[in-house]
Length: 352
Image (cartoon, rainbow, N blue to C red; front, side, top):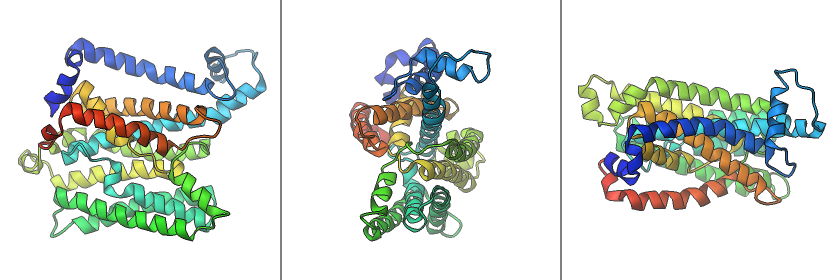
């Protein structure tokens, strides 16, 4: 699999090609953020955006309209930061899961956390209608879904990979059914539209408070995964080889799943369901930097951040009415994944 990925882009096999990628990727993040902060119905030139932001730390005399400062700092900045953080977390968690399961078709939604958090959020909108309840219940049910997967998959102290994936599918299906039940019971004139719109994903309601929740959960999950990067490398060799090398397979696997659940539950809680990022981006990153998770995980995080920021910018600027993120991530992610699937030959992935 690895050779197929790398062979697809021969220039990236060289050290200079890889180094160029890192320089471009690191430089692209602030450049893309600066551009996104200025784009929208109220256009703000990039130089003015930079002066507005720098004015918080440097003695710059304001020569811009007050409305520009409010739009940049209060409306767009928390949204842009949220897209960067969520995209990075989804890319990183997807890379960790695909490596651990040795399966290129695995994404964060496979362990049930996305559906569980969706149910919690929909329940909060139906019963309480407050942002605090939405974030809290989405987070709680996201983690609860992973706990249920754990209980279903663990038999006699063991949880084989196949059983774990099937348990995730079962839990996801169950919570998806409950979400459908809630939308059926919701008032068409009141809560139904709010539930449906939230489920499709959006950063439109992002504030610095919800950004704090997102950043805290994503940082906690990502930090744990980063500490486990060596174990994920070993787990990607297979359970038997990992055990032979002294790795506690069960313990390491659940640590990874817990970290992924922590990060993804926070994202779903504040932004709804944002699919495909954790599935597609790790493949692109692996194609560029290879399968070593010490390098792959930060590469997937950077590419995920850029990818989701681009999607969110298009979502809020392409039409007069904002397009939900879930629609765009699926519209773009599905054909991109199909191209990768064809290029990299599905049969070559079966060996992980």
